[in-house]
Image (cartoon, rainbow, N blue to C red):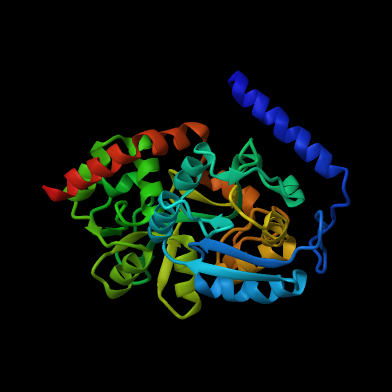
Length: 348
Protein backbone atom coordinates (compact mmCIF):
# COMPACT_ATOMS: atom_id res chain seq x y z
CA UNK A 1 0.00 0.00 0.00
CA UNK A 2 1.36 3.47 -0.89
CA UNK A 3 2.05 6.12 1.77
CA UNK A 4 -0.96 8.25 0.72
CA UNK A 5 -3.19 5.20 0.92
CA UNK A 6 -1.78 4.35 4.34
CA UNK A 7 -2.44 7.88 5.50
CA UNK A 8 -6.01 7.74 4.26
CA UNK A 9 -6.54 4.37 5.88
CA UNK A 10 -5.19 5.69 9.17
CA UNK A 11 -7.53 8.66 8.91
CA UNK A 12 -10.53 6.45 8.33
CA UNK A 13 -9.54 4.14 11.18
CA UNK A 14 -9.28 7.17 13.48
CA UNK A 15 -12.70 8.41 12.37
CA UNK A 16 -14.25 5.02 12.90
CA UNK A 17 -12.55 4.68 16.28
CA UNK A 18 -14.10 7.96 17.36
CA UNK A 19 -17.47 6.79 16.08
CA UNK A 20 -17.11 3.48 17.87
CA UNK A 21 -17.00 5.33 21.18
CA UNK A 22 -20.59 6.41 20.48
CA UNK A 23 -23.56 4.26 21.38
CA UNK A 24 -23.86 1.86 18.44
CA UNK A 25 -25.87 -1.33 18.38
CA UNK A 26 -23.70 -4.42 18.34
CA UNK A 27 -26.24 -7.22 18.55
CA UNK A 28 -28.60 -8.44 15.85
CA UNK A 29 -30.39 -5.75 13.84
CA UNK A 30 -33.37 -4.30 15.66
CA UNK A 31 -35.93 -1.62 14.91
CA UNK A 32 -36.28 1.87 16.24
CA UNK A 33 -32.58 2.79 16.47
CA UNK A 34 -31.88 6.46 15.74
CA UNK A 35 -28.73 8.52 15.51
CA UNK A 36 -28.28 12.04 16.75
CA UNK A 37 -26.77 14.93 14.83
CA UNK A 38 -25.93 18.48 15.70
CA UNK A 39 -29.39 20.00 15.50
CA UNK A 40 -32.66 18.30 14.69
CA UNK A 41 -32.86 17.13 11.06
CA UNK A 42 -35.49 19.10 9.21
CA UNK A 43 -36.28 20.62 5.84
CA UNK A 44 -35.93 19.24 2.33
CA UNK A 45 -33.38 16.74 1.02
CA UNK A 46 -33.03 15.85 -2.67
CA UNK A 47 -31.67 12.41 -3.51
CA UNK A 48 -30.54 11.65 -7.06
CA UNK A 49 -30.56 7.89 -7.48
CA UNK A 50 -30.64 4.97 -9.88
CA UNK A 51 -32.25 2.68 -7.30
CA UNK A 52 -35.52 1.14 -8.46
CA UNK A 53 -38.68 3.10 -7.80
CA UNK A 54 -40.28 0.26 -5.84
CA UNK A 55 -37.30 0.29 -3.45
CA UNK A 56 -37.72 4.04 -2.94
CA UNK A 57 -41.42 3.50 -2.31
CA UNK A 58 -40.52 0.97 0.41
CA UNK A 59 -37.97 3.33 1.98
CA UNK A 60 -40.39 6.28 2.16
CA UNK A 61 -42.33 5.12 5.27
CA UNK A 62 -39.09 4.35 7.14
CA UNK A 63 -37.65 7.79 6.34
CA UNK A 64 -40.87 9.49 7.45
CA UNK A 65 -40.87 7.51 10.69
CA UNK A 66 -37.22 8.10 11.54
CA UNK A 67 -37.04 11.68 10.23
CA UNK A 68 -40.51 13.22 10.66
CA UNK A 69 -39.20 16.74 10.08
CA UNK A 70 -37.45 15.91 6.79
CA UNK A 71 -39.06 15.86 3.35
CA UNK A 72 -37.12 13.54 1.04
CA UNK A 73 -37.53 14.19 -2.68
CA UNK A 74 -36.21 11.84 -5.35
CA UNK A 75 -34.91 12.15 -8.85
CA UNK A 76 -34.95 8.55 -10.02
CA UNK A 77 -33.56 7.42 -13.38
CA UNK A 78 -30.99 5.09 -14.92
CA UNK A 79 -27.37 5.74 -13.99
CA UNK A 80 -26.56 7.41 -17.31
CA UNK A 81 -29.52 9.81 -17.03
CA UNK A 82 -28.63 10.65 -13.43
CA UNK A 83 -25.07 11.39 -14.52
CA UNK A 84 -26.22 13.56 -17.43
CA UNK A 85 -28.53 15.61 -15.23
CA UNK A 86 -25.85 16.13 -12.60
CA UNK A 87 -23.25 17.15 -15.17
CA UNK A 88 -25.66 19.72 -16.60
CA UNK A 89 -26.44 21.11 -13.15
CA UNK A 90 -22.76 21.24 -12.18
CA UNK A 91 -21.92 23.07 -15.42
CA UNK A 92 -24.63 25.60 -14.60
CA UNK A 93 -23.40 25.93 -11.01
CA UNK A 94 -26.79 24.89 -9.66
CA UNK A 95 -26.70 21.37 -8.24
CA UNK A 96 -30.06 20.61 -6.66
CA UNK A 97 -29.04 17.22 -5.25
CA UNK A 98 -28.01 16.88 -1.62
CA UNK A 99 -27.28 13.16 -1.93
CA UNK A 100 -26.16 10.91 -4.78
CA UNK A 101 -26.90 7.17 -4.66
CA UNK A 102 -25.71 5.70 -7.95
CA UNK A 103 -25.05 2.31 -9.50
CA UNK A 104 -21.96 3.56 -11.37
CA UNK A 105 -19.05 3.52 -8.89
CA UNK A 106 -16.66 5.00 -11.45
CA UNK A 107 -18.83 8.10 -11.90
CA UNK A 108 -19.09 8.56 -8.14
CA UNK A 109 -15.33 8.23 -7.68
CA UNK A 110 -14.66 10.74 -10.44
CA UNK A 111 -16.91 13.28 -8.74
CA UNK A 112 -15.17 12.54 -5.45
CA UNK A 113 -11.77 13.28 -6.97
CA UNK A 114 -13.14 16.55 -8.33
CA UNK A 115 -14.05 17.59 -4.79
CA UNK A 116 -17.81 17.34 -5.25
CA UNK A 117 -18.56 15.57 -1.98
CA UNK A 118 -18.68 16.36 1.71
CA UNK A 119 -16.77 13.68 3.65
CA UNK A 120 -18.96 11.83 6.10
CA UNK A 121 -18.51 8.52 7.91
CA UNK A 122 -21.83 7.32 9.27
CA UNK A 123 -21.55 5.24 12.46
CA UNK A 124 -23.18 2.41 10.55
CA UNK A 125 -20.14 2.00 8.27
CA UNK A 126 -18.32 0.38 11.19
CA UNK A 127 -19.77 -2.90 9.96
CA UNK A 128 -19.29 -2.44 6.21
CA UNK A 129 -16.53 -4.54 4.59
CA UNK A 130 -13.56 -2.24 4.07
CA UNK A 131 -13.33 -2.99 0.34
CA UNK A 132 -16.71 -1.27 -0.02
CA UNK A 133 -15.62 1.93 1.74
CA UNK A 134 -13.72 4.99 0.56
CA UNK A 135 -10.69 5.62 2.78
CA UNK A 136 -11.36 9.36 2.71
CA UNK A 137 -15.03 8.89 3.74
CA UNK A 138 -16.18 10.70 0.58
CA UNK A 139 -18.64 7.91 -0.21
CA UNK A 140 -19.67 4.50 1.10
CA UNK A 141 -21.61 1.65 -0.41
CA UNK A 142 -25.18 1.14 0.77
CA UNK A 143 -25.96 -1.83 -1.50
CA UNK A 144 -24.19 -4.35 -3.68
CA UNK A 145 -25.38 -5.52 -7.08
CA UNK A 146 -23.92 -8.59 -8.75
CA UNK A 147 -23.58 -9.54 -12.41
CA UNK A 148 -24.20 -13.27 -12.94
CA UNK A 149 -25.15 -15.58 -15.79
CA UNK A 150 -28.76 -16.60 -16.40
CA UNK A 151 -30.60 -19.08 -18.63
CA UNK A 152 -34.06 -20.57 -19.07
CA UNK A 153 -35.01 -23.88 -17.50
CA UNK A 154 -35.59 -25.40 -20.94
CA UNK A 155 -32.46 -24.03 -22.62
CA UNK A 156 -29.39 -26.08 -23.55
CA UNK A 157 -26.72 -26.46 -20.85
CA UNK A 158 -25.74 -22.90 -19.86
CA UNK A 159 -22.26 -21.38 -19.82
CA UNK A 160 -20.47 -21.86 -16.52
CA UNK A 161 -18.21 -18.82 -16.71
CA UNK A 162 -17.79 -15.47 -18.44
CA UNK A 163 -14.73 -16.95 -20.15
CA UNK A 164 -16.92 -19.67 -21.67
CA UNK A 165 -18.75 -17.02 -23.69
CA UNK A 166 -15.67 -16.68 -25.93
CA UNK A 167 -13.40 -19.70 -25.41
CA UNK A 168 -15.45 -22.20 -27.42
CA UNK A 169 -16.56 -24.39 -24.50
CA UNK A 170 -20.13 -23.07 -24.88
CA UNK A 171 -21.80 -22.57 -28.25
CA UNK A 172 -25.14 -20.87 -27.55
CA UNK A 173 -26.20 -17.24 -28.00
CA UNK A 174 -25.75 -14.83 -25.13
CA UNK A 175 -27.44 -11.47 -24.52
CA UNK A 176 -25.33 -8.75 -22.89
CA UNK A 177 -25.97 -5.18 -21.83
CA UNK A 178 -24.53 -2.24 -23.74
CA UNK A 179 -21.62 -0.60 -21.85
CA UNK A 180 -22.23 2.60 -23.84
CA UNK A 181 -25.64 3.13 -22.22
CA UNK A 182 -25.76 0.94 -19.10
CA UNK A 183 -23.62 1.69 -16.05
CA UNK A 184 -23.77 -1.87 -14.74
CA UNK A 185 -22.91 -3.29 -18.17
CA UNK A 186 -19.94 -0.92 -18.30
CA UNK A 187 -18.67 -2.15 -14.92
CA UNK A 188 -18.96 -5.74 -16.17
CA UNK A 189 -17.06 -4.76 -19.33
CA UNK A 190 -14.25 -3.20 -17.27
CA UNK A 191 -13.89 -6.42 -15.27
CA UNK A 192 -13.85 -8.63 -18.39
CA UNK A 193 -11.54 -6.34 -20.36
CA UNK A 194 -9.11 -6.26 -17.42
CA UNK A 195 -9.23 -10.03 -16.88
CA UNK A 196 -9.35 -11.30 -20.48
CA UNK A 197 -8.00 -8.48 -22.63
CA UNK A 198 -9.51 -6.42 -25.43
CA UNK A 199 -9.96 -9.51 -27.58
CA UNK A 200 -12.80 -10.52 -25.26
CA UNK A 201 -15.14 -8.05 -26.96
CA UNK A 202 -14.19 -9.31 -30.42
CA UNK A 203 -14.75 -12.87 -29.24
CA UNK A 204 -18.24 -11.98 -28.04
CA UNK A 205 -19.11 -10.51 -31.43
CA UNK A 206 -17.68 -13.45 -33.37
CA UNK A 207 -19.78 -15.86 -31.33
CA UNK A 208 -22.97 -13.93 -32.00
CA UNK A 209 -23.49 -12.10 -28.74
CA UNK A 210 -26.62 -9.93 -28.75
CA UNK A 211 -26.15 -6.41 -27.38
CA UNK A 212 -29.50 -5.73 -25.76
CA UNK A 213 -29.20 -2.33 -24.06
CA UNK A 214 -29.98 -2.49 -20.35
CA UNK A 215 -30.71 -5.32 -17.92
CA UNK A 216 -34.45 -5.35 -18.64
CA UNK A 217 -33.71 -5.91 -22.33
CA UNK A 218 -31.26 -8.72 -21.56
CA UNK A 219 -33.88 -10.43 -19.43
CA UNK A 220 -36.47 -10.13 -22.20
CA UNK A 221 -34.10 -11.66 -24.76
CA UNK A 222 -33.48 -14.71 -22.56
CA UNK A 223 -37.10 -15.17 -21.47
CA UNK A 224 -38.33 -14.95 -25.06
CA UNK A 225 -35.84 -17.54 -26.30
CA UNK A 226 -33.99 -15.14 -28.58
CA UNK A 227 -30.91 -15.77 -26.45
CA UNK A 228 -29.95 -18.98 -24.65
CA UNK A 229 -28.20 -17.20 -21.80
CA UNK A 230 -27.58 -13.69 -20.56
CA UNK A 231 -25.28 -11.55 -18.45
CA UNK A 232 -27.68 -10.06 -15.93
CA UNK A 233 -27.90 -8.46 -12.52
CA UNK A 234 -28.80 -10.98 -9.83
CA UNK A 235 -31.53 -8.64 -8.58
CA UNK A 236 -33.28 -8.66 -11.97
CA UNK A 237 -33.19 -12.44 -12.10
CA UNK A 238 -34.55 -12.82 -8.55
CA UNK A 239 -37.34 -10.32 -9.18
CA UNK A 240 -38.28 -12.15 -12.39
CA UNK A 241 -38.35 -15.48 -10.57
CA UNK A 242 -40.65 -14.06 -7.90
CA UNK A 243 -43.21 -13.31 -10.61
CA UNK A 244 -43.00 -16.80 -12.08
CA UNK A 245 -40.22 -16.49 -14.65
CA UNK A 246 -38.40 -19.69 -15.64
CA UNK A 247 -35.05 -17.92 -15.42
CA UNK A 248 -32.26 -19.70 -13.54
CA UNK A 249 -29.08 -18.20 -12.09
CA UNK A 250 -25.56 -19.50 -12.70
CA UNK A 251 -22.75 -18.24 -10.49
CA UNK A 252 -19.73 -17.97 -12.86
CA UNK A 253 -16.80 -20.13 -11.89
CA UNK A 254 -14.44 -17.27 -12.76
CA UNK A 255 -16.24 -15.02 -10.28
CA UNK A 256 -19.39 -12.96 -10.50
CA UNK A 257 -18.90 -9.23 -11.03
CA UNK A 258 -19.50 -7.13 -7.94
CA UNK A 259 -20.89 -3.61 -8.40
CA UNK A 260 -20.89 -1.42 -5.28
CA UNK A 261 -23.73 1.11 -5.03
CA UNK A 262 -22.19 4.11 -3.26
CA UNK A 263 -23.91 7.02 -1.53
CA UNK A 264 -22.34 10.46 -1.12
CA UNK A 265 -23.21 13.92 0.19
CA UNK A 266 -22.67 16.90 -2.08
CA UNK A 267 -20.43 19.58 -0.62
CA UNK A 268 -22.92 22.14 -1.91
CA UNK A 269 -25.82 20.81 0.16
CA UNK A 270 -27.56 23.63 2.07
CA UNK A 271 -28.88 21.07 4.56
CA UNK A 272 -26.01 18.81 5.69
CA UNK A 273 -27.64 17.86 9.01
CA UNK A 274 -30.71 16.37 7.33
CA UNK A 275 -28.68 14.89 4.47
CA UNK A 276 -26.41 13.03 6.91
CA UNK A 277 -29.47 11.77 8.76
CA UNK A 278 -30.93 10.39 5.52
CA UNK A 279 -27.67 8.55 4.79
CA UNK A 280 -27.77 7.10 8.32
CA UNK A 281 -31.27 5.73 7.71
CA UNK A 282 -30.20 4.15 4.40
CA UNK A 283 -27.30 2.43 6.17
CA UNK A 284 -29.33 1.48 9.25
CA UNK A 285 -30.38 -2.16 9.79
CA UNK A 286 -33.96 -1.23 8.83
CA UNK A 287 -32.90 0.52 5.63
CA UNK A 288 -30.54 -2.29 4.71
CA UNK A 289 -33.26 -4.88 5.28
CA UNK A 290 -35.56 -3.09 2.84
CA UNK A 291 -32.80 -2.99 0.23
CA UNK A 292 -32.54 -6.78 0.52
CA UNK A 293 -36.24 -7.60 0.75
CA UNK A 294 -37.60 -5.09 -1.77
CA UNK A 295 -34.59 -4.53 -4.00
CA UNK A 296 -33.25 -8.11 -4.20
CA UNK A 297 -29.78 -6.64 -3.65
CA UNK A 298 -27.17 -7.49 -1.04
CA UNK A 299 -26.97 -5.26 2.00
CA UNK A 300 -23.54 -4.04 3.08
CA UNK A 301 -24.42 -4.99 6.67
CA UNK A 302 -22.94 -8.50 7.06
CA UNK A 303 -25.48 -9.40 9.76
CA UNK A 304 -28.23 -9.53 7.15
CA UNK A 305 -28.85 -12.44 4.76
CA UNK A 306 -28.67 -11.93 1.04
CA UNK A 307 -31.67 -11.72 -1.28
CA UNK A 308 -33.64 -14.76 -2.36
CA UNK A 309 -32.11 -17.04 0.26
CA UNK A 310 -28.54 -16.20 -0.75
CA UNK A 311 -25.93 -15.76 2.00
CA UNK A 312 -24.90 -12.29 3.11
CA UNK A 313 -22.26 -9.90 1.85
CA UNK A 314 -19.25 -11.58 3.51
CA UNK A 315 -19.94 -14.80 1.58
CA UNK A 316 -20.78 -12.82 -1.56
CA UNK A 317 -17.31 -11.29 -1.54
CA UNK A 318 -15.80 -14.78 -1.74
CA UNK A 319 -17.89 -15.59 -4.86
CA UNK A 320 -17.10 -12.44 -6.83
CA UNK A 321 -14.09 -11.02 -8.56
CA UNK A 322 -12.46 -8.62 -6.08
CA UNK A 323 -13.24 -4.92 -6.18
CA UNK A 324 -9.78 -3.35 -6.04
CA UNK A 325 -8.18 0.09 -6.31
CA UNK A 326 -6.48 -1.10 -9.50
CA UNK A 327 -9.85 -1.95 -11.05
CA UNK A 328 -11.18 1.47 -10.08
CA UNK A 329 -8.20 3.10 -11.79
CA UNK A 330 -8.79 1.01 -14.90
CA UNK A 331 -12.38 2.18 -15.15
CA UNK A 332 -11.48 5.81 -14.46
CA UNK A 333 -8.41 6.17 -16.67
CA UNK A 334 -9.33 3.77 -19.48
CA UNK A 335 -13.11 3.92 -19.40
CA UNK A 336 -13.33 5.84 -22.66
CA UNK A 337 -10.91 3.47 -24.38
CA UNK A 338 -12.86 0.44 -23.12
CA UNK A 339 -16.10 1.82 -24.53
CA UNK A 340 -14.37 2.58 -27.85
CA UNK A 341 -12.98 -0.97 -27.99
CA UNK A 342 -16.43 -2.40 -27.39
CA UNK A 343 -17.94 -0.13 -30.04
CA UNK A 344 -15.28 -1.13 -32.59
CA UNK A 345 -15.79 -4.82 -31.91
CA UNK A 346 -19.53 -4.67 -32.53
CA UNK A 347 -19.49 -2.26 -35.45
CA UNK A 348 -17.57 -4.60 -37.76
